Length: 229
Image (tube, rainbow, N blue to C red; front, top):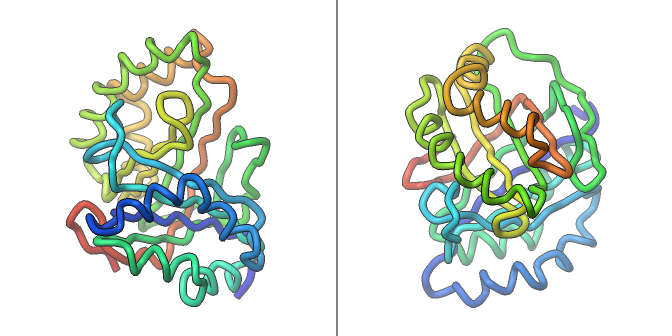
């Protein structure tokens, strides 16, 4: 069943014996993605240490964010593509999920994700928040990050969280999955996260930002020692 664009998030923890291969993905990984059928947008991502939200970079965790023309192209990428096969063969952990947007504000490298899903009445949702941080504002942004991370780790209804980014310090993203829209809203509208949003708006931290809510499907794999699907 095809209903327009489908995003895919892939997260990988590269095995110790494959670290050199993993580092190479940041330099040449994008070239393997250009020929993938139906792929209209992609980003090769790094991650921070542990859960990925701090200043210290991870030596092994990385990922891909891709947008495909339709679900058939997304499924083909996950099941038959040499790109994902290579990541799986070099990984000690591999996680992937398909995503259909039901709301989107802002853009990523000029792309605003098409909305082609309805907000679920019940069941899980996912959210992606990404931003290009203005260099003069980076210090102020990162001073607030630890409080936001701690509030996320203890947030009721949070099923999954990972911090990723295109570049250290200045191009960051957070991906989360939640039990329900209500659980996500309760977190977004309270505590350190709400204060961080207000500060970003008031002080103009970002040159570009995007906030998307998705209906997730097909979550499979292992991340941070926890199995999904």
